[in-house]
Length: 194
Image (cartoon, rainbow, N blue to C red; front, side, top):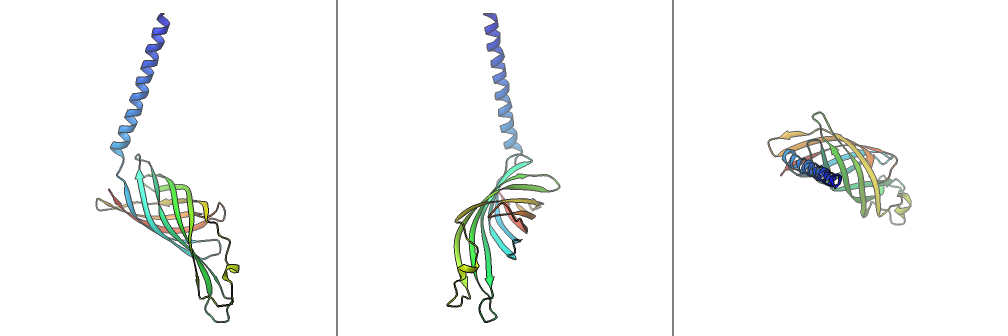
């Protein structure tokens, strides 16, 4: 009988310690974490033989602890494919528009911030330009997936501007559309803390 009571007492103490630890972690995360941030993002990316590609959009960031957070957003990505098939000097081509939704896990330090994670890419539009009438431009463009998954890895540095604003230039490496042929990008985000 005594053994049973002491094991109940021990398990009750363990439960109290676990509860106290969980509550302490929750309180410290909320006390020391910065507020949410929302802002705009712009980047230029080079790679895969396609030249410079523009990426722009909205960004949302939540710092969960002093060193860890999550970054996401909605970015418009434009890929341009050209051909000089026509007899005139004007290049013909196609633009593909994608909406990228990155889900990045971010590590913060005083020196640099590091973020990495997958991106969900949704094909949203196709636009032909300078098309000669008898030519089918679809022969000169790559096959398009409606939805694809890629990755991105980036290193950035945050600069506080006043109390509520942050400027964060970055260098990124990855491919938003597949897990090979990485692209190099340079960009920046301008964020508002709330």
